[in-house]
Structures are given as C-alpha cells and as structure tokens.
Length: 165
Length: 201
Figure 1 (cartoon, chains in turn purple, cyan):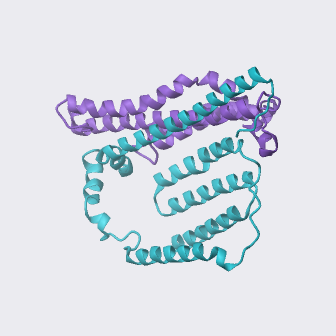
Figure 2: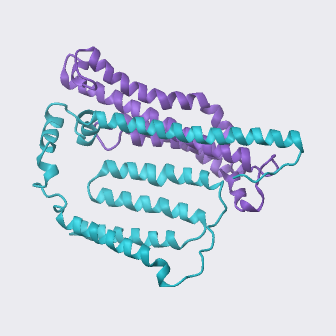
Figure 3: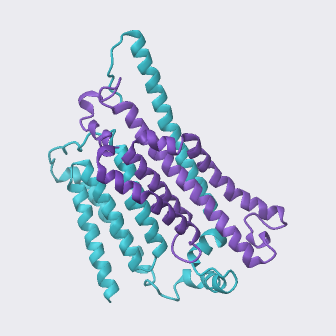
C-alpha cells in the first residue's frame, strides 16, 4: 500500500475525514429544509470511511468498521424503517402513518420523516461500505503479487492496479 | 433562454464525453470519464432546478460509483480487447436499424410530452398541488422532495431501501462465495501438488 507512505495524502485524509462525516450528518438531518436526505448522506458518510481505507489500507478500514458493523447497518436501516411503519400501526394508525406518532400530526410527520430517513441513511452507508470492502478485499486476497494463487498470469495484465485499491 | 443555452452546452458536453468513453480502450480513463459524465449530468439537474436529484447524481454517480468501479477494475486487465477488424456494412446493419428505429420511437414519444415546467401538465395537476400546499402549511417542511419521498410516498421509499439492502446482500453473497471456493481450491492445490497460481479471475 503505497498510498499510506505519501505524507500529503495521509495528512489530507486525516484532515478531511471528520468534516466529511459532519457534512454527511448535516445532509442527513437537514434534508427537511434543504436538498439532501438519507440516500445522499449515506453515500457521503461511506465516502469518508472509504477514503480512510484507501489511504491507510483495507486492514485499518476493517478495524475501524468491522464486517459485522457493516451487516448491522445494512439490516438495521431496513429494520428502523419498518419499525416506524409498525409503530404507526401500534398507535392505531396505518402502516407508515406518521400522523399518530405524536400528539400533533405535524410533529408526528417530522418524527416519522427523520427516523425513516435515518433508516435509509444507515442502509445506504452499510451497503456502500460492504461493497467496497468486498471488492477491495477480494482483490487483496487474489491479486497481491507474491501471494499464493495471486496475480493470475497473462490473463490479468492489469492486476497490479489492485495494489492501489 | 440562458438556462436553455446552458443545458444545450451541457448536453453537448455529455455527448462529447460519451464519444470519448466509446473510443477509449484503457479502463482507467473510462472510469474517470464516467465520473465526469455524472458530474455534468448533475450540473444539468441543477440547471433544471432538481437539486436533490443533482445531489444524488454527484454523490452516487461521480463519487461512490467511481471508487467502486476502480475497486472492481482490479480484477480486470488494464485495457479492453482490440475490436475486430471492420467487416463491412452488413455486419453493423441490424444494430444500426434497431438504433434508428428505437431512437425515432423515442423522439415521436417526446413530441407528445408537455413542455418542461408547464403548469397544466398532467403530473402537475393531479396530487402535486396538494403536496406543495400541505408540505408548507401542514407539515411545516420546506423541502417538498423530502415530504414526498419519505411521507407521501413512504411506501415506495421503503421498497427502495429494501432493494438497496437486497442488492448489497446479493453482491456480498456472490463475492464471499467466490472467495471461499477460491480459498478451498487453493488449499486443495497446496495439499495435492503444491503447484500455485491457478488463473481464475
């Protein structure tokens, strides 16, 4: 992993990591008032962790967000979304009826939308991180030069590109 | 008028990038060009006042997709295969006919569409006025896109989230399965003969 040894990339990644996450949270929870929402926020937050993994290596990325955390986010988002819907049914409303979530229908809609968007954000973050880890991990297992079974002969001429990822 | 000109310019830029993508044989430039394509599309959506869509396009199309493509590129050779020698007009005739017919059908369908921003267009007179009205006065949420997405069309978004979940799970199952079989086969290779370097990719 040559990228870890480049001081410019390393320092830039360290400086950018937290602001990207803060921006993602802003997009997530400010979606009611400006452009944005769960889908975009999920991608932005995942981008911060992917940047970290790109610069400091996949191992460091996996230590930061282990595989079970990815899967938990993946499933947790759908569960949160569904739970909001079921909560509406429990409170004598319909599935995904936010009006009954609070004493005031307008407030209930606010709660419902924020929770649902949070679920979407969780799932999207989980999926993006899981995909990146899966692809990059697959490359690392199969294409590291010198590793057993790696760099598959002439068929994969560009296999060295895998090192950058 | 200025908006229309900007859009035409961006559209021309899109076509230009597309031609570059088709003509480039190396994969790395193609991935970067695809990111540029998304970025130009995002600029076009901003110009059409679809800020949320533009945001998604910039984040997903230009950002994450590029990174995922780069990660996937690690399994591929660096360049496409050379195209076969030109085999005369008969070879491309069927594709040409299909393209022209499909394109003409699209153009004919597009003529029927109401102009962009026409307030009397069917989608703008059905439920949209109620959403626009209620979102501000009843829900007190200024971004109508969010209320439509998460509340009025909450069921659809639930479906979308499940689709994202399923897609992610599917890729994980595929890649994890491949890794496991590859590992097992590698172990068998090591056990049986000690010969390394089978070329599955």
